[in-house]
Length: 462
Image (cartoon, rainbow, N blue to C red; front, side, top):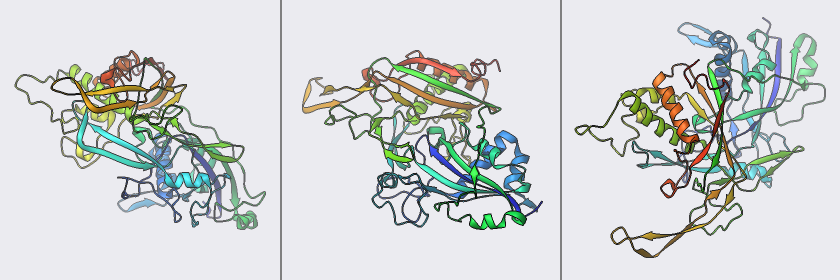
């Protein structure tokens, strides 16, 4: 071990989906907002980045490797982390990091877009599969496409080089921030510059390396680093869901049209993102979005139905019906293991949250067009039209939806796995709608799931 030998790496990542590292409170308009730097721009705390990397190492290399690189504390025994992580600083339109102490977005279109964030609405489903009362919440997230740069300093006794650590971080299973089980936090590493320093020989070059990652690195101080992305992880199976809508579908909450008439009362959810080309960032036009939270809610409710059926949990003539204001109060414990729980949903009153085994990514929408339908509200007693109650919706039709999902198979019971398989089968065979207005026939899809293990785990063969 020598404190004069270490490796420095500057890592740039790009968000593939929106993400949010919460700051512990909301604002006047949102229940949850993301962490910002001194200028009001989104930032990545070093502690969050270190936690993500530690978990990536623990999952793919074991607990001992994580303890060696990132330290530990067990009663009187402990070890300091041998990896130092800076905060991640966001990129402006010129694809360069912005100083942490900055003057705000100024006139930069990308920074203005990132500072404003993207608003997402959510509702919670009750045991009957409809919206639970007093269970609406919203959040402000960092848009997809945002880029951040942070610095790693890895000491020589970490037993983990920069190339290996970046490869473990740049895995499709690794995500950052909160609500990762609902589609947020996916990213990829786009470039890395690194170098091993020995201060007995490279002291002059190390002194030329600026402490601020927003400053230009002099030529020859750092070099481009090649790494191999970790693709296969033990205990994790992945799938790609390719779905084709049978008819109209809509996940509502949008405020912008994607080519149709924007005067409709109900519009599909649309968002913008940052696009990068030849070192320049641009803010895209509005495009339809299929958030993973919509897919997760549908799959969870249908899988819970199948799990109750397989276990023989029936509501008899003398049994109490589920409380419609609670979130699945009678949900089998095996389903909680599969999809996770929070304190307010814990039937046993336990204090600890449980992370779900299923991680779903936001859906990619291609080729969908926007239509327009007119409706008349009917009187509930006479079934006649109500005066002045004409309304319009602009659902999408055609196109394809592609979702990715990963399942950590350890600890998943056989009945939960079978219930999950049946829920996916209902979805791909056109029996489980996604989105809104399913009572009018919207949201039914057909398709197929392509599994990394050819479906062996899902069929119980693994």
